[in-house]
Image (cartoon, rainbow, N blue to C red; front, side, top):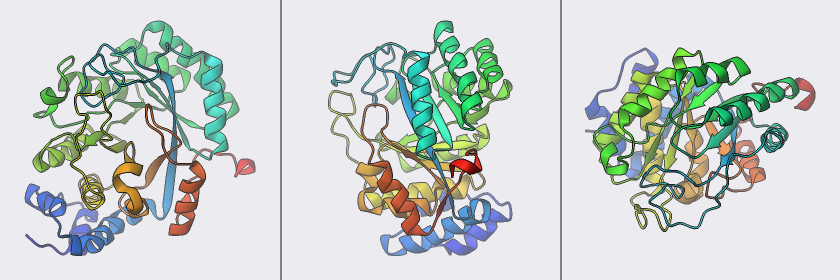
Length: 332
């Protein structure tokens, strides 16, 4: 099924939803039409976000020591990958990370911790740090600490946490093939608990975990139903020692088609190119910012990113601008 991608973009901007058949056409787009598809996706992205790019930075606040059995994760209980293992960092380390995020012009600072869910003590460490971060910087603060209890969400909100990330990761049908130590509904419930506390929901996916194209469409639609404000799209960087070791299903062109699909299905949302960007998009990374409007800078949880100066240069070379959403004018 060949489509006029510009016309499809106009329909999406006018409020129409694409069909599953149209979604498959995006993922099956012939390579010689890829630039036309990206032009259509950019038409939507430009309508809602112009040429602005949002920057996000992670601090790995707790590494390894996780009881879950997620097949993609080097920190899980079933992984033999040699990763750093340490308990929750202290408040001073979280504050140092915020200082670096501010220095790199990252509008969003993400405090990420391994584990099934946070202890109350870990929540208290984060809330204490966030209160100081909000006094010193105008950063958007995102917490990602696993399965959340309502009272913990309320504490995070009261301290000034703006956003909570808990990824769906994959489709409901494929979820049991990726992890069995928690359910897909557990993940949906945590996102809803954050929303109910008044925290902006962030939830995304990992593509390349042996899912079908229909699964990818289902992921994008589920996030639309969930009304996630920010959608990180990760591309599997298979790590030796994990159950998904050796999985290599992706190429840069397909990754771009996935990003376009997420833009067509979630036109008004922040689409962020996340983990695996460098190894999967490779020389085509810049093209990813035509459908997406956000990236991570710096390192990820257990894998390295590219130098932040390269990311800044890429944005400049595209003629795009960093969105200084929360940075005071005297720091721009």
